[in-house]
Length: 233
Picture 1 (cartoon, rainbow, N blue to C red):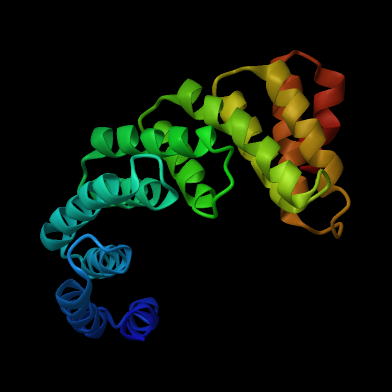
Picture 2 (picture 1 turned 30 degrees about the vertical axis):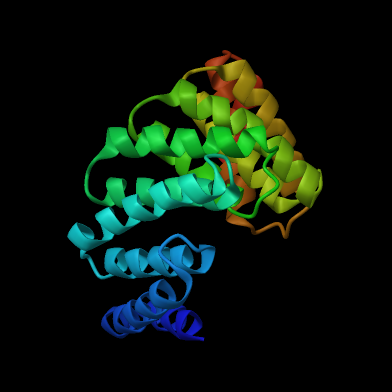
């Protein structure tokens, strides 16, 4: 109950109150269950997240690090909760400006999720975080590698004509455009456009996809094909 209340307060921006609730919950669980019980570790993580949300990174970071170490020891390095802790620590490092450390952790968590074939709900946070971190580091090829793997999972879970799948194709297409991989971008964006054209005609994402596909064709010097797409986009 205390953790549920704390999570609600944190989502409402009442970080100071959330911290107080989580501190009590953590103290209670440590006393009753021990320091490495999964419920205690959940409270550890919740308190660290509240500290981070409140901008108290000096307190959040060691708690995230402790949670990760205890989950590795108790649950193993590839357990979904451990991978979630790796992702959470990476977000804290990112907030602290420790970008290289954050990217390495994101990729570690993403690799663990890939080995499990992305079944866990946390994969939908971990993989996008990894892609963004790689792109922020200017490592577009590494971002592309993850973007090439993730859309297939989204397609299989949401459908080949779903908007979430189209969104992943658009992100892959944008990455390929930035690398000037015109033909590869063309293929991804054509598939994306075929899905998005089923939306209401005024949807901005459809126009955006046309524009990106036009750019991919322009890069291939297919001017007659690119012009109408660029103009309509």
